[in-house]
Amino acid sequence: MGFRFAWTTGMMPSFLVRLRRDVRGNTLALMAAAMMPLLGMVGSGIDMSRAYMAQNRLRQACDAGALAGRRLLNGSTIDDPLKTETTKYFSFNFAQRQFDTAPYTLDITVPAPGTLKVDTRTTIPTTIMGLFGIASLPLSASCSATQDFINTDIVMVFDLSGSMNCPVTRPNDGCGNVNQPNSKLDALKDAAKALYTTLEPAQNKLAANNLRMRYGFVNYANSVNVGAAVYDKNSDYFVRRWTYQSRRPADDATADSSTCAAYDGVRYYDYDRSRWLCRYPVSNWTGKFLYRPVVYDTTSYLAGARPAVLAQRYGSDAWEGCIEERDTDATLIDGGASTAAPPSALDLDIDLIPNSDANRWRPAWPDVEFFRNDAITGARNYSDTYCPTAARRLKSYFNDKSGFDGYVNSLIAKGGTYHDLGMIWGARFLSQDGIFRAVPSDTNDNTVADNPKKIKGFAVRQYMIFMTDGDMSPTADVYSSYGIEELDNRVTAGASNQLDRHLQRFRMACNAAKAKGIDVWVIAFSTTLTADMTNCASKPEQAAGLATNAALIDKFKEIGSKIGSLRLSQ
Image 1 (cartoon, rainbow, N blue to C red):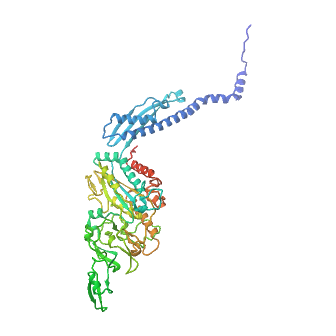
Image 2 (tube, rainbow, N blue to C red):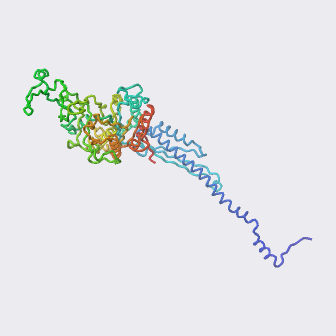
Image 3 (spheres, helix red, strand yellow):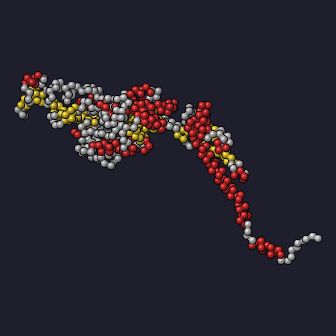
């Protein structure tokens, strides 16, 4: 007979009560219920992280491809070499099927003149997220590379002191002002030529777009040879009379009639002192001079003549082109901490247009300049004062590498080191508001010799490359662009801190240049890169201390690549 179970009254409620109260195994049930959402969260995190890594790599590849392709872009034509170069750099950074992505293609376009755009799309498969119906995630990259079509002016400011004649193995040596094998000067010439070669592609593309790249040179030692450039711009920028530390023939009270006649002198009677005097003519050398400040007419000297001067027994040499600076302020510029030039320091005013003798320049005239011990005894003449190679204003050397190289090869090193002079005139040669400003400032003429702010609507970017191989070294008894400091006291006002004052002037000149938007690079070659030099650069990374000829050449190449570089626009 069969077994049959039958509920009796009261059994059902008792079972349900026990079941409700029994909590054994609940955790397992809860975990089972939560497993799928948890798996989805963890899995999506893994898949999203992988997709994020792939997306970043895709963007990097896009940037690399766009930059590579832009270098080959000519006009708006996308040719096969450009496509090949773009694809090569893109695929090197993101190969097909990398991260198991789907095959991609590159869409290469020219949306605007000078800009190359690259777009691409692909997908990356998921793992855990596939269990939830999401089999892949989309990836995309869009980037543009632009080469600025911007007019470019570059002034190179070179320290051409005598030590540049030496190799780096002979520091603190002038090598007798004779260039030696493997000299720093030779390395500088090679470096300047390397800069031109590096920038030549950018220069050619600017020219193809009716824009321009220009180079200028300012060379300094104890003076700067900028006279021809300034005089040719406007001869009224120079004084016509100036006082030099000089000498004049003295009246001789010791010569008798025969001696005076022998030297073609003129005898005359001094009634005030009741004596006969002999005045010697300038054509005969008798050694009879009074040493004192003497006013000279500079008109014919500025114009290229060799005027006869009382200070010499012969006519002076022609003007080489070095200058004496306009008035400065030796009271407010005292070697202290101030880095802003006072308005009274006219020589540090980059843009001041000369309108009086106080702010006009003066021709350096070594033949008439004499250091003196007293009124009777002259120590020496400065006819052998070092005047560096003539500066050259900004000009285009498009298709004229031989002209560029010819000028660079003409550089000669001699003299001392006045960094402030180099910085002042480097900024003055670049300034768009000073003596070389263009009128009008916005022009469509890309051959204008002066410095416009815009050409054909495009701005003009300005760079200065300042290179020195030594510390500032002003000397009180040297004839410089500030006269003979021991006698003229233009910088020191008789104080003993000449070096500190010139260093302060250098800092002021650096700040004035940067305030005009000039991008300044500073190179200390075979010398210490000082804090003043580092601070003079527009950015700390644009100041460099270099120890070898090869390093100098490489630095100029690097600067050239930065000036002519491409940039990513997005």
